[in-house]
Length: 137
Image (cartoon, rainbow, N blue to C red; front, side, top):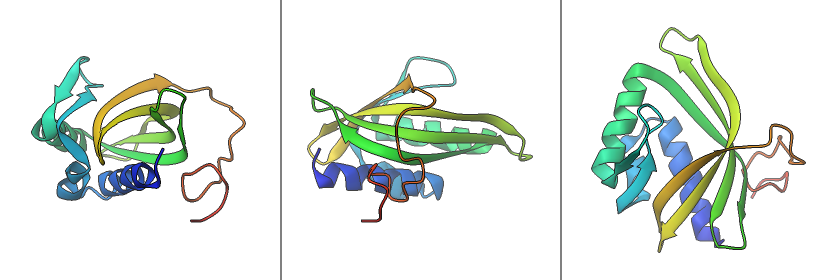
């Protein structure tokens, strides 16, 4: 993984959590393919992901914090995340750790797959900068 990919991902998560839709979608390739957790299937293109996220934010309050970023042997960028979804009246709907697996087209995110993560891997969960080294960068 290049530092640029890590920076792209951390920037996208930050913008998503800040509800900065314009900034969040700037990190996506024009033809990005994104999973639709609500109905299954995939959402295609920046405008599709934008509409999907805006709908989520009107329905519940998702927050996704990266815990560890790594690249596997196939060049896929894997991000272990803590996902906390709250209802609009602040009730917890989901509180889990999952893995996001990203593909890239140059500097842009071209795809995401979500997989269940081992709930207790040997990972520094207190890592402030999402790179798995326990330090700040």
